[in-house]
Length: 49
Image 1 (cartoon, rainbow, N blue to C red):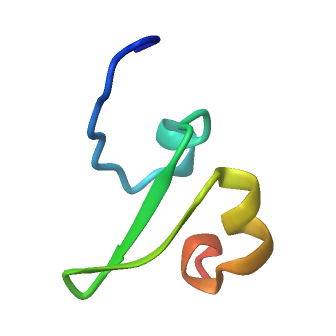
Image 2 (cartoon, rainbow, N blue to C red; image 1 turned 120 degrees about the vertical axis):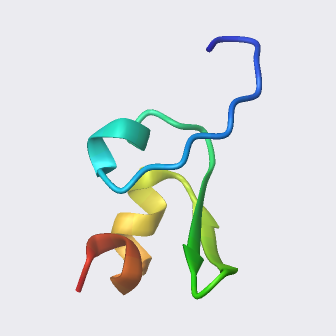
Image 3 (tube, rainbow, N blue to C red; image 1 turned 60 degrees about the vertical axis):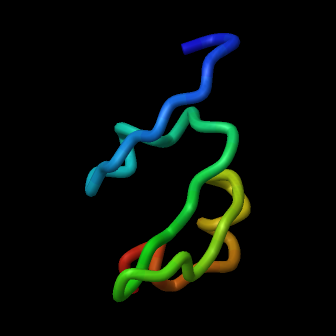
């Protein structure tokens, strides 16, 4: 997907781990955004806790 924009809807982290920007959607709204590393550090929803 280099040089392209792609929208990927996934439930498994392994599918999106290499993405530049991840949007976490909760109850129909964007709850958080960031890289995999940023979301692991700051998001309970993304980590599944």
